[in-house]
Image: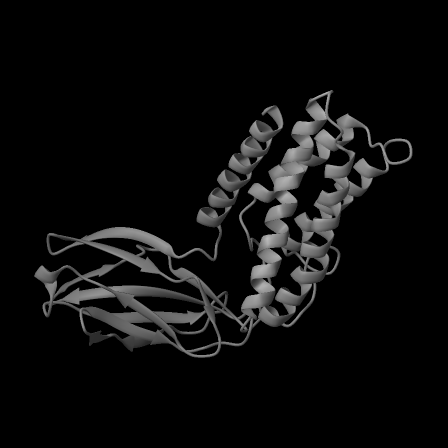
Length: 264
């Protein structure tokens, strides 16, 4: 019963951190609310798109504003001094929609969505543009396998840390399985996903600044150190606990920060 509780606790901690990471990453859609002509408009603007086609940007205004407002996109390449491009949005059923042109893998655009009615105008994101990054198509099978293996690696990492605290439980096997899963997910499947999406296998330390790759490297080093800390196959509990905590802290860092970015 105690072991079941520890597994459920590890699962809860892992799921909680995964949700936090997912909701705070720079590729998660930019969500917000705006007030225009006395009506509240809820919107979700993409910050990641495949470069197989144009990226659709759509706003669904309240029925009270139907036919009363127009919209346009204002966009340019990210971190450039190029002039802004203007693209009118069109009515598609109940939506106002515009299409950003597709970009090369890792290419970024910054854009505003403006709503207009007569002389009144509003930018949905305020004074700061939304930044969107384009990527190549990633095989669903590879991506799902990468996500599952990394999730299991984090789950076993948390469980190994809990086992290290419990003097009546052997944390060695859990630590070994954690290291294996992080290696497979982060150093075999991860680089394949990175190559499909952005054209490179690795863009973290020492060749780049991709924080996702770099934190995976730190996780791997931590578990190698933990496994090597004891005699034979028995790692020291303190090292296993430290590796578990470090892994969890690194996992909390939002995905894709300082990720692959095309230099225009």
